[in-house]
Length: 167
Image (cartoon, helix red, strand yellow):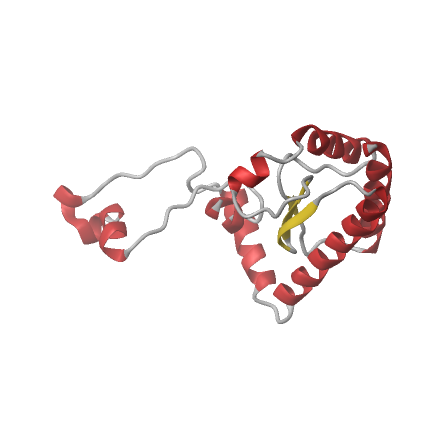
């Protein structure tokens, strides 16, 4: 997960840790006997590194985290507006920029609660969203700063159409 965040959504490997551990990956600090080689398919991926740098540049601009939070709240509101009229029990779980629709009438506190929810309805919801132009993988919905009014309209329409198909 850390790698995807750093890579702005692109595949990028990343490791992090305390200085006393991380120094072993730097031969100049660890010496020849304490040095550990670290290699990986996605280590040093230049496209992912460039995407990560651009992501960090954008996130450092004033107001970006607040904007992301607001966009997430808007998307969660669109989900609520679509699902509430159905009467189907659900919970919106998570932070606004990273949330999940869980079809259950119980509080969701942990992984077991999610696993006990209506998985068939979740699969139907996700499939209907895809059928209506909104790709949402199983699990969480991710919001991003690139969302614009057109994207929100597509999202609203997909949520409404998917909710009407849940029955």
